[in-house]
Image (cartoon, rainbow, N blue to C red):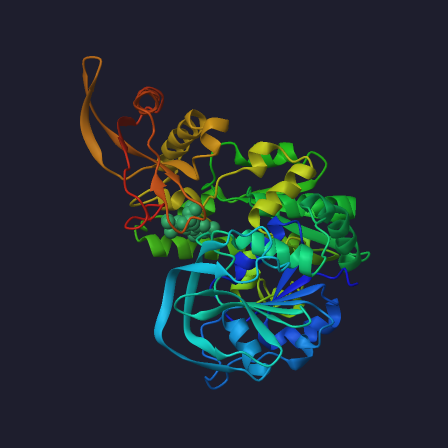
Length: 509
Ligand code: XMP
């Protein structure tokens, strides 16, 4: 049988990344391919199983994506989810109709055939998550019902040959209690896919692929201090040795110690650190609008990088980038064509014609971290918290100056030091200091002070989309206040931000 990837044909579902995540969690490699490009990609990869995703349309909409009958020829096992199921029913001659009531939310699933390989180990009844407006009225010939819910009828169906299976609910979302069991059953019991994929297997393959793509050329990598570019660089270094050159732009908006951290992590790398601190502060002079700050930092970065690329691009043909899978999927991607049009650095000058090499473009963030650990990168770099591209400039409200940057850098280092360690790493998504530009009156010793306020922000989050403030113990808050006022000369007051997201955002600008 095929040992190609499991391919998720994407009909536009909001949950498609989640399907990929859940399959990877079963140690099975998978790819997400947009439906319009599926035929081409499936011919290339010889998939071991197909998952047809949900999607926002009705199968009767004009231009609604359809299931290619060739996918259902029985050679490759198919699991069709939500819209995917309805498209299969339609392709196989059954009937799909608009439901009287759109079914959205939790529903109780009752198994009719609990011994079926797809359903083994699932409880006789469990909660599933539904989200659909159409429903199956009549199954195609040769299909039977394996499980149902009171509202929608056929919730799980199977073709007689056992090669095509469909679920109306979303097994990939956490609200579906036995969803992971069902997905694992499909992969292992139905499709017989080996569960042998781990990020460490990825390293030799990725190294070989970089060698193949770069050939005998030289390559350039831009290091930001973040985990993605660091892991991409470490892989490229293994692949290319001294044919790899690295550039890091010190824009003065980095946190304390970042440049040194990168230097320490890559002792052998040909690394050029470009000191552009003055240039960024000059460009930000007098600017108080957050969006304008972001635009200016982005623009200056591209200019500095352009100059560096020209200076270092002598004989360099390839640019290594740490683009990760969510970026690729979000930009409509999967597969080489869109990966090429998507780039992080952006706006490279026309006369610097690089070939882009993106070794992490099929990995999720936590997989990138595991690869980083496998490669022996320092944990501080591998487990680094997210940090905005515009850096400290969006944590200084009002004008950004070299002096205020220095105050914030010191305050930020104290917050990070106090909230470091395993007990916090699990709970804290990001912890940092903000300089709101509020001055207040205080008293230190016998003197009146009129100093800066520091806001401490610590949030927990799964993905940065929503967040909650961390219930820091009073002793920790006390130590933070004492250290910030005692050690950062300009600061005389400390406050703690207790706003969740929504309604707040994680950053202040
Ligand atoms: P907000 O403030 O929108 O932030 O709740 C959500 C997450 O995104 C990070 N962030 C950025 N990351 N460039 C980035 O690479 C940016 O311009 C940027 N702005 C915010 C933020 O740190 C948080 O993790």
